Image 1 (spheres, rainbow, N blue to C red):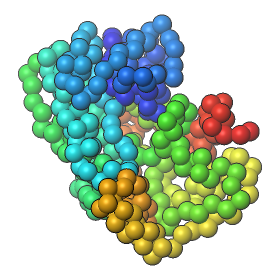
Image 2 (cartoon, one colour):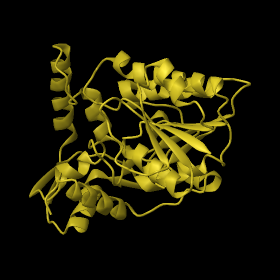
Image 3 (cartoon, rainbow, N blue to C red):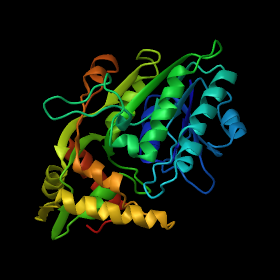
Image 4 (tube, one colour):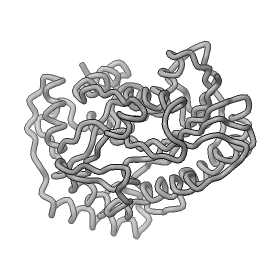
Length: 327
């Protein structure tokens, strides 16, 4: 069976490809021009194209039986919704049309946990929860939610099932950009680490990759699955980073009012056309504890989870080997 993986050079894309190859699948990895997949294997074929180009996606899907759609614009610096919709919404529609024309058996759409309403430590969010603030104010989350809704409404007699997976915050190796691993780089062997007052759910990227491969044969059509593991505050996360690295950073929690004030300044800068991740809504997100449950994925997709300390260790080692961190 041949599987098309879009966003093949991303943190998740590379880990999914590694998992697919390990399980005997033939893989075509779609990447943008000048981007490289950090894996070399005789069963891997690289395909250069733009997810925003309908013909590129159509040709990439030829001869494949499954599409795992990961490619997305995750940048936090833009305040224009169209910058995200062009990739996250239109790109998803291109994938679905390509699946329809190529008689694809199953499309696995990688969405985001933030399209599902979060909960608390005692009552974590589930797939039944509606999209809620402050993520409704995020251009990225809004675009992923719109893509997810359109995918679940998409109908075709010539293609198979559509499964949506909603990963939380992923940590692990092959983070070439880096993307989520920036959270580790910012706190690595620092004397003082300033952290937001909120928290989130963390999961090892290899666990997400494993369950995505499982979704090729398991899971219900038009169902969403939260891929989650450990709920913890940012302070707890950096405490684990200290444990892994043997460092003794002082961890200082930034007051909520200070973060929100900084966010207001960033919002004003965007009004003058200055791109910055510092934005009022982004700061609101850092102040909440968006926690989730993985019960459905464990029961229906056989999600297996690895301690987040191992995810941190794998990411740290990858960054060291890549020259992004000193030993």
